[in-house]
Length: 417
Image (cartoon, rainbow, N blue to C red):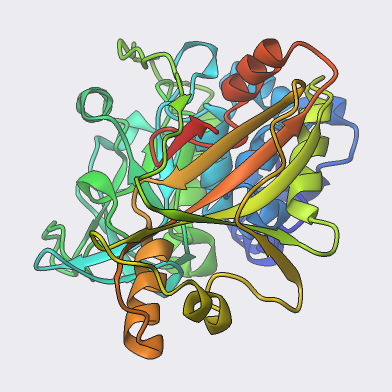
């Protein structure tokens, strides 16, 4: 039994992943993103490992999900071979649409920035590293990676991620639960499931730690079973799934996502906008540009950090105080302007913001408390993507929206700027 350890630039969990596969009695072979993808057909299963593929540019997992290699992984998925994605690998499976398994790999969920909540208060956001408990919440035979567990068995394993909060539309979540695709859920050491931190370490809907696809052969799990013997049943289950060649009955998903549409941006009255650009080459913009090129979309990409600063009613903003604070831009490596060049005919601008704007909230708090920057009602943080094309702008816009490379509508909101 040969398992391909799938690695993209920035993956960094291959050692423990290889060890877990070998300890389960299978062969593990590192498979890099730039190897001949035709060789994937020679493997019995696949493990997309954790790390920070492509430095999480644009957002975690999206660039890897659009890599040509994933088209070949999808072909192997359709043969029913087991595919495990852990942490960044889970993000890649979700962004590629392999999980949860809708027709044509439609994207229907997100893994968003962590939100640690207790008693309805946000205690913290972003990266979190700890041990956690997850409980099998489906029948043992509903997924390739749960076969050797007992009913409701608890697994104590580590997690380490900044964007692991499952966001799923309510109707789809109901179907996934009914289909036994909500495989593992966060719980306490006694198996009790409640939404508060630290039991739910990232604010995931339904305390979800892992979701499988509708044919049970692919699973996206955010904690790391490969980093401890406690998680070894995940890998022995994978082994036995391959050995038995039984497969799992495909469950129909009836959920149909709404068509993704974006409206024209209108800023708030009397607000001030900052557009911040790197002085040196922006590698994130270059990576997005190259990923689109690989998909046959030839454009030039520029990126700006976008800040909208909203004043209290009928007062002036302390603009100079905000600039001198260094909170919204670093003058050593970035330039700031309050107005962009006039829109050209062959240019598209898309503004993207997270629905939970933790960065904007944090900057507002810092400016008021540390710099006595009064009269600020709100600060909103976004990314403004400038897309320059020689082709029909409307067609290019539709292709970019379809790719989801610039935003995931379940965790982010986008406008035409």
